[in-house]
Image 1 (spheres, rainbow over the protein chains, first blue to last red):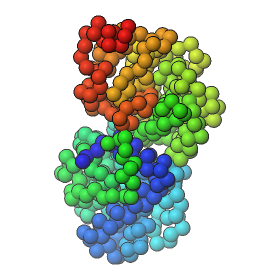
Image 2 (cartoon, rainbow over the protein chains, first blue to last red; image 1 turned 180 degrees about the vertical axis):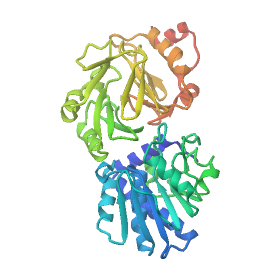
Image 3 (tube, chains in turn brown, purple; image 1 turned 90 degrees about the horizontal axis):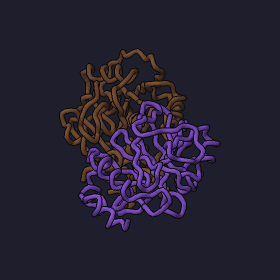
Image 4 (cartoon, rainbow over the protein chains, first blue to last red; image 1 turned 90 degrees about the vertical axis):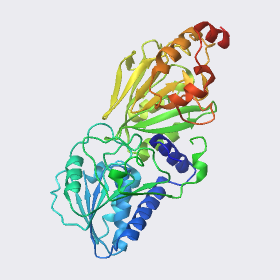
Amino acid sequence: MEISVDQMYQIENNGHDMGFLKKFMMENAGAAAVKKLAEKLDLKKKKILIFVGMGNNGGDALVMARHLSGYGSLVTVVLLGPPEKIKTEESSWNWSILKKMSSVKLISGNNASFDFNPDVVIDGILGTGISGEIREPYASAINYMNELKCFKFAVDVPSGLNPDTGETANIFVKSDLTVTFHKMKRGISKRKDLTGDLYSEKIGIPPEAEEGVL
Amino acid sequence: MKVNQIQVGSMQNFTYVVEDDDTNEGIVIDPSWDLDQIEETITRNNLKIKYIVNTHHHFDHTLGNEGIAKSTGAKIIQHEASDLQHDITVKDGDVIKFGNSELFVLHTPGHSKDSICLIGDGKIFSGDTLFVGNCGRIDLPGGSAKDLYHSLFDVLYSLDDSLTLYSGHNYGGSTISTIGKEKTTNLVMQRRTEKEFLDMMGQ
């Protein structure tokens, strides 16, 4: 069964209210994403560049950064804004952990210069919530990602793709591998041209959290 | 736009905390009881609440206005037909903006004279005009089955089927629905003449 973004958000909130907090969902999402990536590629010593937006899609990507470091990858995180503007508690919490990890290189702020030579680039820029035109600095990061010749991975949904309708914004990411979470969103599966290989992974949300929503 | 639907109090009311996707701005729709839960959602998402919006003046949709206004500094928005104290008055066709999000105001009288629905980003907040599987009462002061008929069939019926429905109470078989689903499954949304509708509603 494919679901809408609104249904997914209600399911997450119901799970959170049951005590399965959003920070646990974020942890499981990031872990599941890395596990899928590890099935496709040997991650050891790979240079991995992660673009991170200010919302919870970025939070999932921050969890990935920590797990990838554990796999022996050489991780660089580019946060597309100042750390104090991170939108949610669970994302901020993950950023604060990375700050204590010397194995992960952190770059933040609006004017990061895009000069990298990664083996893998991860799109944690925009998740399910996109409204209207994509602005800077997200637009430049997306354009830069698309120009890179390396393997591309999208967390939850390629940035710029509307997960409900399958329509794209003015700019969007074209990925090689996409892992979405809990259940497939109806607009994502329509756009295999943008997602590449597409998987939906469980992240521990109790099935009971779907009651009254689906 | 992200919607936090929170059931509050003992009358199955829904309060909504709605977040803009691009900024930290948000709004609260219909605060009444359990304000600690509302505050928790605001804090967890680091939200700056710009407005409190009431879908109508009834106490179970407005009781928490003062509390939330005090803790957040938000301005209270109501329809021009409301007699309650508020900061900003809206009418049909107005737009409520927070961050990069916009909600359009539709005046939908019937349950009360000042009932409004809010539409934006594929969602409709319908207050007590339309529930999952039913519609609001018309027997309270200011209620009118005739007004409700025209709100349902001249206004809501013509909206996009894909709109996600967020209503004012948890009265249905599910907490959310869509306009399209309600058109096919909700008894009150079945095509009727005005007279048939008034007969059905007992007015």
